Length: 261
Length: 261
DNA sequence: CGAACCCTTGACAGAAATCAACTAAGGTGG
DNA sequence: CCACCTTAGTTGATTTCTGTCAAGGGTTCG
Image (tube, rainbow over all chains, first blue to last red; front, side, top):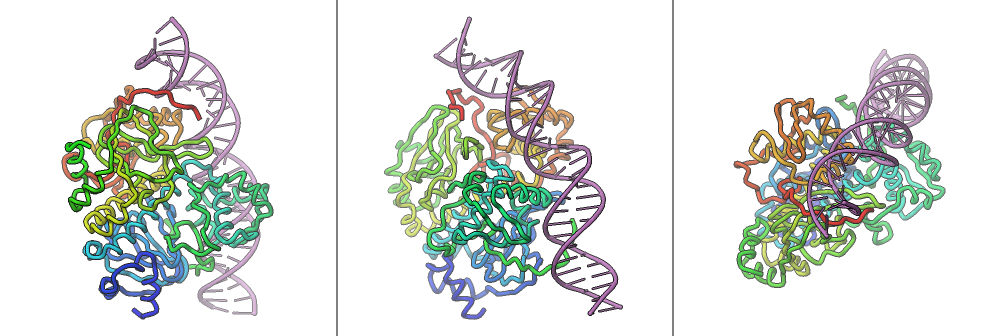
């Protein structure tokens, strides 16, 4: 791997504090690869051989059962994913595929545990990262169980606007069908829900969404720090925490033939 | 705290491997308390001052929003809960209340981080526990998004039967209204779903559930290790992992006046 | 005994999935 | 360069599912 990439990874919260020697031995066997869109990196049920780090592009985490599929999260640069499976040395609970052209660093997960024991800082960083992931999924679950589909969509739109500095609008970072799956509805339902939110000052034009009256939308979404996450601390600087909402993925994902279920 | 309790806690996977001195300094300031049923131990949004360990009884983790409430998990002895919030020093995402008469050990969470840095074994144990919690929530979410309510109920029943050694039946460990909330439906819907499963060889008599044809039920639930968890390893010995399904709580929870939303 | 609660049942309304058809945009290949 | 094809998205009609409201039975506890 090139030094520039190493430096980027080194700067991740997960690796920032760890011992230099350990970092080198860990990344020595790592390799860097760039994939086109719609490439499946990980298959549910497989064994966790590599810890993945998204460097560019974005990766969809999804789950399947009986021919159904649902997207659980989208991972954006620069974040890791499937950390938990690596640690437990257990089968993946989720599959992963690239959305756009995506560069991924893969770190062999074989000796993570021994490094934990030798590098307290790395262990602490891992704990912090895992706790953040855990809380992220809990929020997702709370959303699903406490809000209606319409409220989830409204809350999602408000989160997006808020995370981009409370501008007047934004362009969807993912395809609508993916957003629908993330929100737990069918694409048809999402389409109707979008239309129903026009009464709340939401204008939709293709991928572009603009708000004329955020307060009106907030009356639907009833934003809550415990469901939507805390307000972004600084002026829209990513915290480095795993961005498990559908955040900043490239909307320009190149089309690729997708197998029908 | 008494020595017998200390020994029990010491035997938890989270504490088993940690340094004796650290364990003592951690539990020195801890205290032990027994609560009646329906006592709220933790309020969503509060700050995480204590790591909780359930010694006897059981604790419901639930979340609220806009007057709605949903139960996220039930914690059974002997397990910890709200570990993630303690680590992040962040507001609780869930509330907690006792179900039956419940004994809880509360460990001050102030200096967890420093212990992590000094005690690699404890750090590793924490990582393992967090990873298990994370995967547990992911499974819950997958259930909600991929299965219908009927399938979730069927799968729940099969999990219960399986975790108790594949007997002919079992008695519900929690009230039906709580099970309904956990499964993400109203009590009325659960009642109807139960009835609809009678066609699949499910007999309900109060809290007692018996199966005449598990294979028939499996055709509805389509059990899957990635949604329902792995088959219990030994003959129904708890793994010590946090039991986040509605597992073995006492069904005899004493009634208490519950405030209506 | 009465109050409070859980559970069930019925009737109804609302939400969302499904099925089908149609449009529009992008890429492909002749 | 254009015709064609694939796919995302929308819209409509319909069905299925689920929540809501209301009422009644049974149990527990004071």
